[in-house]
Length: 66
Figure 1: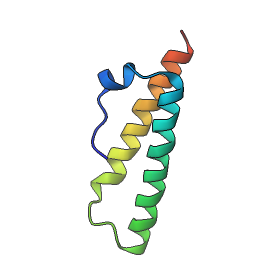
Figure 2: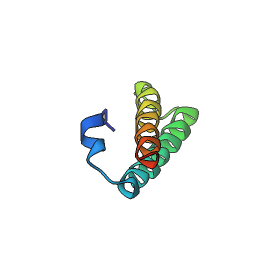
Figure 3: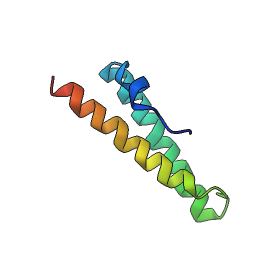
C-alpha cells in the first residue's frame, strides 16, 4: 500500500479511519507472513505499513479528543 497522506485521512470519519486501520493491520500481518516464508521481495512494505498504521492511529486519537 502506498503512503497515506494525512490531509486525505483528515477528511475521513473515525469509523472510516478504523476500517482503514483494520485493512492496514491485515496487510501488515500478510506481509509479515510472506517475509517469514521467503515470499516477500519488497522489504520496505513492512516499514511503510507500520508508519501508515501509526499515522492512522494518531488521527483517530486526535479526532477522539475533540
